[in-house]
Length: 91
Length: 91
DNA sequence: TAGATATATTGAAATGTTTCGATGTTTTTA
DNA sequence: TAAAAACATCGAAACATTTCAATATATCTA
Image (tube, rainbow over the protein chains, first blue to last red):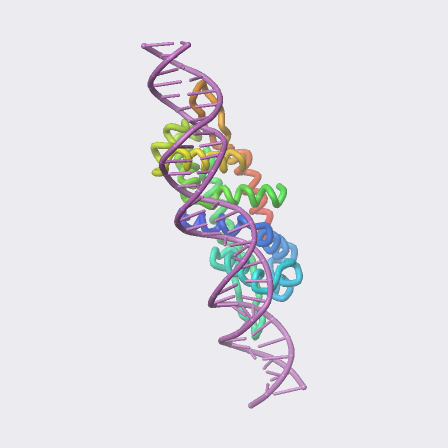
């Protein structure tokens, strides 16, 4: 994995609200609708939308449009790649 | 691992210069002197000092004073704990 | 012990991030 | 097809991070 990508993922993980979103996705078998996330995170809707964009841009989650709703899913593959980079860092 | 700690480590990893320092530590069998890091990173000395502090505060590296020099070592244990948190996030 | 060397701290400018109200876009439904 | 619902985008305020010159501190050496 490229350093630029590691940096982007780290940035996405470097916020308490975004970590909360990821934990909630984990609890809910990896997927949640945007409206459900809006209920969990105590921020205004545009702020939650911003955080979901950061996570999506880092590819930590995948957004799928379903009508006028959006379903978010954890991207296990990218988490694995990030973990592999970190593991390779050790001696 | 506490969310606050995950956030701190993620922040420490969210910078290209700090990732470069970690990669260099890996290449050099996990340890480097501050002066060597100053040569690798193309920033002024106080900036490098600042980045080393971020990494040390996150416990990703360990600082040991040796006379008037400081030796930095990768902290494999904390990297492992961080990796475990991320792995547990997957479904 | 005075000067040199290695690193840390301070303070300030530049830049980036977070947050929200207002508003825009898309899709559903009455 | 007009109104409602779900989400995204914009713009600005508040806050945090990065960077460096100047300076401080600690340790070594002549």
